[in-house]
Amino acid sequence: MQTKRKDMKQFVTDRFLNEIDQTTKETDGLGADPFLQSQDTDNGWKSNIAVTKLKTTGSTATAKVELKGKDLSRKLSVSLVHEQGTWKLDQVKPID
Image (cartoon, rainbow, N blue to C red; front, side, top):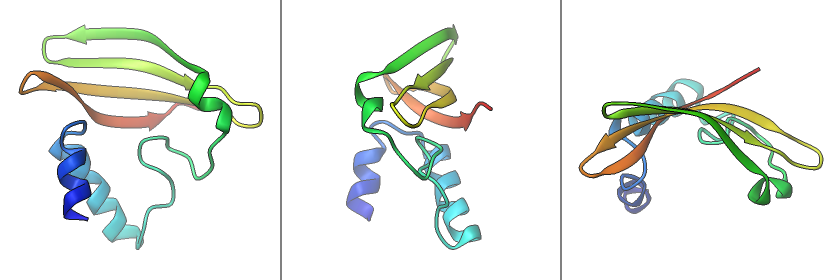
């Protein structure tokens, strides 16, 4: 697990990784993928990703991401933080 966490630190903030860890401890596992905010996936997502409403303010950015599939779609609010010369995921929330 430590190797995976080290690899993830390239793309995800420590704050988000700690939030995932805390949720895992509190709920005895994750109920959904923290990056997709879903228990299920759709193969169509890999070729149907729409990013809209990208807004950058200093070292933070937000965007709306829609994953469209044949049977399942997801709308997400994604937050990023610019750290050490790269943009990293800091939060992913579902949009109802």
